Amino acid sequence: MARILGIDYGRKRCGVAVTDPLQLVATALATVPAHELLRFVADYVRREPVERIIVGQPLQLDGSPSESMRYIAPFVASLRKALPDVPIALYDERFTSSIAHQAMIDGGLKKSQRRDKARVDSMAATIILNDYLSSKARQDEASMP
Image (cartoon, rainbow, N blue to C red; front, side, top):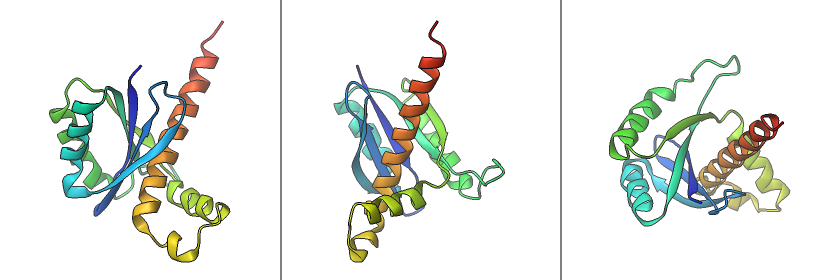
């Protein structure tokens, strides 16, 4: 089985997470400067089998696209062009940064460690990807006879 890659896209930094080959759990992979992300993902896909890429979709509370989509949409278009054989999907990322901060607090990280934006970004990507996996599992379960 191939891995699934998850991306929390930011204007400066992007968190990247990846599943294990069985697609059971996601873990943080890296935090990459936004201007290097396309090359990073393309290089990763050349080295590892990737079934699909999930990109966090920032939505407002009412479900409408947030202002950040104007930066994410061009990246997704470039990614689709660079990797035409890899399906790319957007997935709701509302509250992932807040959840990441709370997870860091619950995990006992010091305040100075919680200020590390790169750590927050990679954790947010991991949360997006784990949420996607949970959603996929619920859908698979619901479709069983």
